[in-house]
Amino acid sequence: MPRKETVQPAPLESLMLPDGTLVEVRDDTCWEKGRGQHKVNQYEQKRDGVLEDVANDYLTRDGRKAFTPDYMATGKKFARKCEGWGLSGEEGLDDSALRKKLYNDIKKQIHILESSIAANKTEG
Image: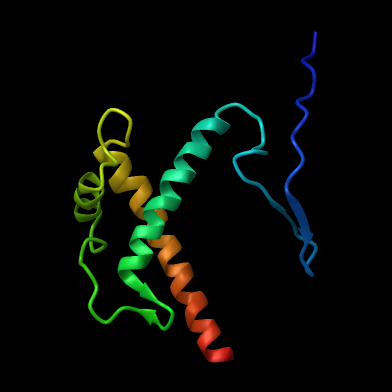
């Protein structure tokens, strides 16, 4: 017998971009339901917290800071910094996940933020 289809909670807001892309705004009160989604959401919350700390260390409204800490130079240095922030251990991520997954995600997000700042500077 087939299972019932999962009823997804409504998003906080839905936007249609000019190119036809639908963007749904969600928070922790209306996450989509599905297998493993709770783990994905927990990871995204940790990632966003780390991204905020790294962005404060590396970026200003004008772009990359002139003097920046060097912990984003390699995955190993990044993992050591995250361990200092308390992200490893029983409840946290292991060293491999910090180096391979979180480091690459944060590096990509920082690049996106830098590009956005640069684009805004050229427009303004």
